[in-house]
Length: 108
Image (cartoon, rainbow, N blue to C red; front, side):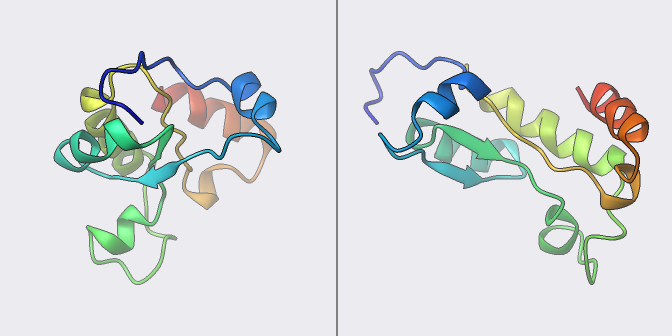
Protein backbone atom coordinates (compact mmCIF):
# COMPACT_ATOMS: atom_id res chain seq x y z
CA UNK A 1 0.00 0.00 0.00
CA UNK A 2 1.18 3.49 -0.79
CA UNK A 3 1.94 5.83 2.07
CA UNK A 4 -0.05 8.44 0.19
CA UNK A 5 -3.19 6.36 -0.24
CA UNK A 6 -6.22 7.52 1.70
CA UNK A 7 -6.70 5.11 4.59
CA UNK A 8 -10.26 4.36 5.54
CA UNK A 9 -11.65 2.28 8.35
CA UNK A 10 -12.02 -1.33 7.26
CA UNK A 11 -15.61 -2.30 8.06
CA UNK A 12 -17.04 -5.81 8.13
CA UNK A 13 -19.02 -4.90 4.99
CA UNK A 14 -15.84 -3.83 3.21
CA UNK A 15 -14.20 -7.10 4.20
CA UNK A 16 -17.12 -9.10 2.79
CA UNK A 17 -17.01 -7.11 -0.46
CA UNK A 18 -13.33 -7.98 -0.93
CA UNK A 19 -13.99 -11.73 -0.60
CA UNK A 20 -12.66 -13.45 -3.70
CA UNK A 21 -11.09 -10.20 -4.90
CA UNK A 22 -8.25 -8.19 -3.47
CA UNK A 23 -6.30 -9.89 -0.74
CA UNK A 24 -6.57 -8.52 2.77
CA UNK A 25 -3.36 -7.86 4.66
CA UNK A 26 -3.85 -8.58 8.37
CA UNK A 27 -0.87 -8.33 10.73
CA UNK A 28 -0.54 -8.67 14.50
CA UNK A 29 0.73 -6.00 16.89
CA UNK A 30 0.48 -5.53 20.64
CA UNK A 31 2.29 -2.21 21.12
CA UNK A 32 2.23 1.34 19.76
CA UNK A 33 5.69 1.17 18.13
CA UNK A 34 4.86 -2.09 16.34
CA UNK A 35 1.52 -0.68 15.16
CA UNK A 36 3.39 2.36 13.79
CA UNK A 37 5.64 0.07 11.74
CA UNK A 38 2.81 -2.10 10.44
CA UNK A 39 0.12 0.53 9.87
CA UNK A 40 1.15 1.62 6.36
CA UNK A 41 1.31 -1.99 5.18
CA UNK A 42 -1.87 -3.54 6.62
CA UNK A 43 -5.61 -3.37 6.08
CA UNK A 44 -6.17 -4.69 9.59
CA UNK A 45 -4.01 -4.94 12.67
CA UNK A 46 -5.01 -7.81 14.91
CA UNK A 47 -4.64 -7.77 18.68
CA UNK A 48 -4.94 -11.35 19.87
CA UNK A 49 -5.00 -12.99 23.27
CA UNK A 50 -1.65 -14.53 22.30
CA UNK A 51 -0.28 -11.30 23.82
CA UNK A 52 -0.27 -13.22 27.10
CA UNK A 53 2.32 -15.67 25.79
CA UNK A 54 4.26 -13.25 23.57
CA UNK A 55 4.68 -10.30 25.94
CA UNK A 56 3.65 -11.50 29.39
CA UNK A 57 5.32 -14.91 29.46
CA UNK A 58 2.16 -16.88 30.21
CA UNK A 59 2.15 -20.58 29.27
CA UNK A 60 -1.12 -20.22 27.33
CA UNK A 61 -3.92 -17.71 26.69
CA UNK A 62 -6.09 -18.81 29.63
CA UNK A 63 -4.53 -16.25 31.98
CA UNK A 64 -5.13 -13.30 29.66
CA UNK A 65 -7.49 -10.77 31.21
CA UNK A 66 -9.83 -8.27 29.64
CA UNK A 67 -7.74 -5.49 31.16
CA UNK A 68 -4.65 -6.82 29.33
CA UNK A 69 -6.54 -6.95 26.03
CA UNK A 70 -7.97 -3.47 26.49
CA UNK A 71 -4.54 -2.05 27.33
CA UNK A 72 -2.88 -3.54 24.26
CA UNK A 73 -5.85 -2.65 22.03
CA UNK A 74 -5.60 0.99 23.11
CA UNK A 75 -1.84 0.95 22.52
CA UNK A 76 -2.37 -0.23 18.95
CA UNK A 77 -5.19 2.26 18.32
CA UNK A 78 -2.95 5.17 19.38
CA UNK A 79 -0.99 4.62 16.20
CA UNK A 80 -3.70 3.41 13.84
CA UNK A 81 -4.86 6.40 11.83
CA UNK A 82 -8.19 5.23 10.50
CA UNK A 83 -8.33 1.47 10.10
CA UNK A 84 -9.84 -1.31 12.12
CA UNK A 85 -8.18 -3.39 14.80
CA UNK A 86 -10.00 -6.63 15.46
CA UNK A 87 -9.28 -8.02 18.88
CA UNK A 88 -9.90 -11.38 20.45
CA UNK A 89 -11.13 -11.67 24.00
CA UNK A 90 -10.04 -14.04 26.73
CA UNK A 91 -11.96 -17.27 26.21
CA UNK A 92 -13.29 -17.40 29.77
CA UNK A 93 -15.12 -14.11 29.22
CA UNK A 94 -16.98 -15.07 26.06
CA UNK A 95 -18.64 -18.36 27.02
CA UNK A 96 -22.13 -16.88 26.98
CA UNK A 97 -23.54 -14.39 24.47
CA UNK A 98 -24.47 -11.83 27.13
CA UNK A 99 -21.03 -12.06 28.71
CA UNK A 100 -19.39 -11.66 25.29
CA UNK A 101 -21.41 -8.52 24.55
CA UNK A 102 -20.55 -7.05 27.95
CA UNK A 103 -16.88 -7.83 27.32
CA UNK A 104 -16.93 -6.13 23.92
CA UNK A 105 -18.57 -3.02 25.33
CA UNK A 106 -16.06 -2.80 28.16
CA UNK A 107 -13.07 -3.18 25.83
CA UNK A 108 -14.18 -0.52 23.33
